[in-house]
Length: 227
Image (cartoon, one colour):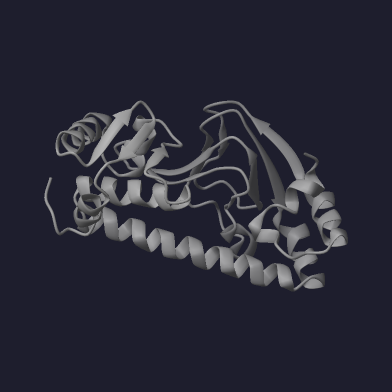
């Protein structure tokens, strides 16, 4: 898929004209990253934002002790580091390619000039940033108020919603990465998966998770049940 056709599929740029997609393509830089290659580090100048074309990108923070907390994992069609466009501040977290990835980089200055000519882009950006803020608020709530089993149950239900409400869901990342996303360690996550399976809530087959008792998962996610 060429860049113009790809941009037309990105929700952030929904509803633009072909000419506007051509303008976006003119300022975009096509970049490729190997697995585990850094895209930017926390504190690097926020010179623009990115959109994933293929692969997966994780955004994460590191504590003083070196502990990693994954904030988000992005896949094809999803933008990241958009706040840099409006604020122009350094990137507030690290970004790394989880798999071989192809991303588009849109420089801040050129994109702002484009927004001045095409104000509807700003509305799309605000909608995307509002959704991101909502997700971060949910992440903070889950990490601070919920136990790890509750977080995992909520995550599996969310994956089911994203995958057309199916009872069989596919984990888009490794269980090690999932542990980082949920603020725990792989060993703890494995124990919780086993407990959920023994309780008859789920069945696991590698990255395939089958939801056997959705009501029990919902109760666990809502804090109404203990594992």
